[in-house]
Amino acid sequence: MIQLKGIVISLFALNFLVTYHFVDWMKDPFLDGKRNDYKYSDQWEAYLESIKKGPHIHKVLNDDNYCDSVKEYRDKFPVILNSEGLPIISDRILYSNFPNWYFVKKILGNFTSLILNNHTDSNSHNVFRTRLPLNITFFYHMTTNYHEGKQIDTQFLCKGQRYNHIPGNFYLDGKDYNALDYREYKSYYQNRQNCWEDFLPKTLILSEYEDCKEFMNDLEENVLKNDIKWVYKKARDSNQGRGVKIVTKDIEKNIIDDYIKNGKCQDGFIAQEYMRKPFLVDGRKFDFRVYMVVASMDPLIVLYHDGFLRLTAAKYEAESNESWRHITNIREAKIYLETSNFTESESSKIIESLDMTFSEFSSYLYSSHNYKHDFFSKHFRPHAKKIMLHLIRMNYNRLLKHPRVFEIFGVDFMMDSEMRLWLIEVNTDPGIAEITKDMGKINIKFLKDLIDIEYSLEYSPIIFDSILKRSNFHMVLDGRVKGYKRYQGIINQECI
Image (cartoon, rainbow, N blue to C red; front, side, top):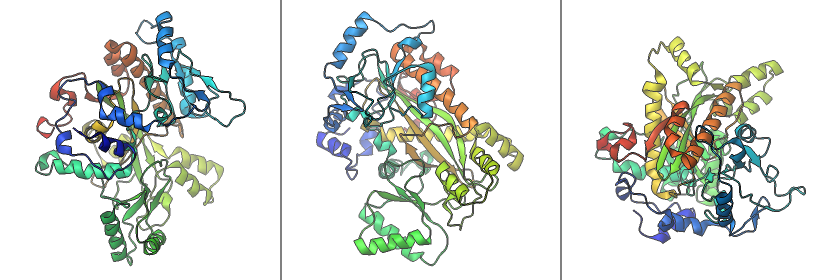
């Protein structure tokens, strides 16, 4: 357990050079069954330090008496629950600062009552300053650090309200943080090899002197080789393929020239070892996007949800300099289509082929590889859940244990030619969208079930299990259960 408040505050100020001691972490503070008051925690103090003083966000005024007013309002007008125990639609008052044209916002409007729809653009002359309505029961914001502009428990997130971001979430989102944490966490298992299997490709943090030096030495040693060995990534605040580059010869030369000129690597980037032998689908590279939902921090509840495969638009060629053969996202696909002579019909078919459902992938394994086992229940999900548990254990003591916050993380995996899973990255802004019809179906049900789960935790905890059972979520960690059983058998007891 971290003792020094100053250390935690410096961490929340993005000083990732300060690291925790994992021997203390691994005493599993959430196995002892104690529930600590978050307002007496280092995380709460660090959160208070992070708050930016300002009059409003998106022209919604701050009010230091807001939560007091909400309590008075709810004493007079309590939330009405339906026969199942969930709030009726007129009491599912949800404020979301996602733009109205976003898929997420449109879907949320199908099973909640949206308010302040125009307060997503603070520059609009048609939007006037206003106060938060007292009847809000849910905040679902695109801004992942919204809590730094309004104070929890005072200016928003009062009793009876849920919020979709956890203070400290950026530690899981930061690729440099994850790489540093992974090294330290891995050392905890160094004498228990039966409990450990690497799941993160070798990652160098280029703002670190030794990592930068190792990276540059490797580039210089392999300057005459044509093979691609590294992926160059922005360490934080990037998604949907932004800030990701395959280190081709041209990019390699630019990196070396920049190093010679400045005497150091570029801050804010990492280099990750490139998977040279990926498992392919019809010759195309792909990754798995799944969801990890920290549904509650007190009690700690972590859920897994299936996602989909994301495929490259063009077939994989290990020596190619064309990024769309290596990077799996819609932006790269559109660049490929714009630089090729496809008809409109052909382009539409390629876009539709960019994702694959899990059931379609299972059928592909059977038809093309004679794989007769249930790949997802026997192989993929157990490994993905175990990695998720490690991610939570690595970061648990950095997250605020507030009882009304939750977070959706998009977790991306790749699979090598031997069908071994590797974690690529974690995103706090997973881009829940409808690029294809299949993706839309998955994400619509995901959002509906998630809202029901969160409302059940807030208003009717007794029905949580029945809500979970009817959904497509799987339990990863259940903090309501005492002792080792919280882990659902995903990690062996001797490996805790």
